[in-house]
Image (cartoon, rainbow, N blue to C red; front, side):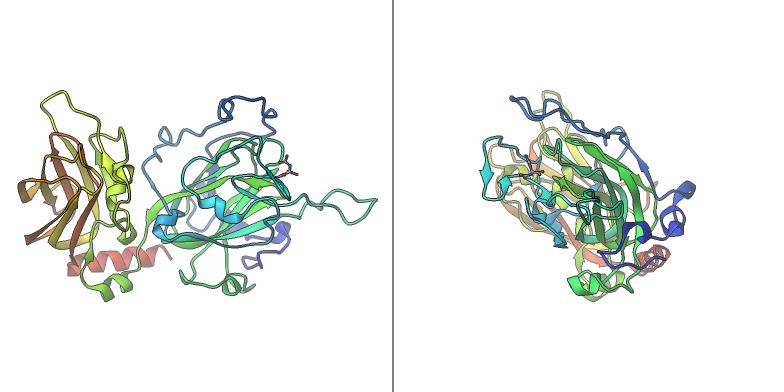
Length: 401
Ligand SMILES: NC(=O)NC(NC(N)=O)C(=O)[O-]
């Protein structure tokens, strides 16, 4: 079976072929990237991260993927069956979970994560929870996408993390209600099979499903606390929505644009330049270290698909003493094509939105060069998909189910 309600028994919760087959490479939906199990030591004072067990996502080649569960994209924790000790919304808070050993509230220790109460068995003779007992939360991704990895971060949950977790995913309407998501007819696909995890650790899993999903169901077996959930992947936009928009930002993360590479990620990542909305503080943008050579910094991007760029915005918001001095914009049509300059080297002002109308040019990739270093907060490449770009996007989306 592939359809269950969120509260259904875990032993019957997912179809083995969906978890291990259906588009999975090598017959497996996921591969653990870490092998942390068991308790961490009780907190002994000092830096609580001193004994934190980290996952090296950069080494696994997953370091620069977008977090599809980013609140800035519109992700949310729609509902959970229990959040007695700590609220479900903490799962998607940005940045590492904080721990204050002195902070207690009316219900217990204040924890920065999603934490449920301790489950109990059916009677005095059966005091332990049933193996099928578990808690669950439903998460809406900020943009539909293909999931490449999931991080279940149990930071500071040292003796009260779940024994195991599992994750399923579904492609539903992005604005589906809790009732619609809890419909027993909805077909969920197993993304992470029930897997033991460790306390106070970044438990990471690579996901091998070439499928487009909008929502996740995170289960913790039998109960416990999870500090953060990160869902790394690639945005797979809705071609009908983009066609309806007509003109849109071809490089925006929410529309399927990605950062392919950058010269420098020292202070803040280049992926910030394609986030929704204006930057709100300096590290919402991209900032490089100070160059002491004669080179320059740059970011290269892949557009949502082949499109014609007509209007460009370069925003240096909140970058004041460290805005890029000048910028150029280059595009190319295809991986191997020559770069063509779309915008000549142009002086930039600090903390300013710069707008340029450019000669329309079909392109699949773009590159912004900044001179000599510094930062930009946002890059917007407004235009429309070409007929070829639309056709390829429609076929790619269909192939993702
Ligand atoms: N020390 C604790 O964190 N205890 C309990 N949790 C909270 N948040 O108080 C528990 O049972 O896991």
